[in-house]
Image: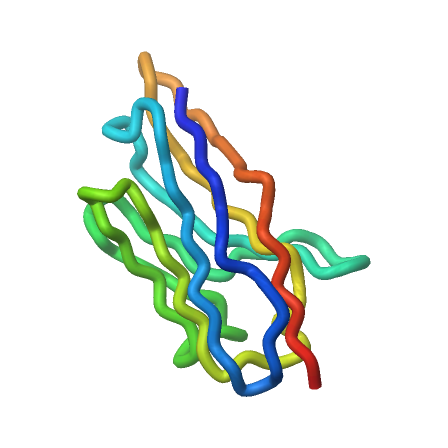
Length: 119
């Protein structure tokens, strides 16, 4: 089993920054991909950024140049640094871990952390 817990959300003025953290626990060696997603009120959940076990990352067009995903393997933590925040970044941000066990792919979502950007 793998668990992920997000933190770091909050209230910020437009143009400000936040760093979100996703801490994984359990069978972390089986994780092959961790992603940050967000869901704004009335909208579908969407990918923000993700990073693979090999360190490859990709971003949604809406956050390119403003967000950076990184990882600290020793701490089992993936970060999402968000700069130049906009009101449209307001959403609940979720961490998702893809992990592999016994030939089967699994997914584990965190409970989310809320980000509110004030205009």
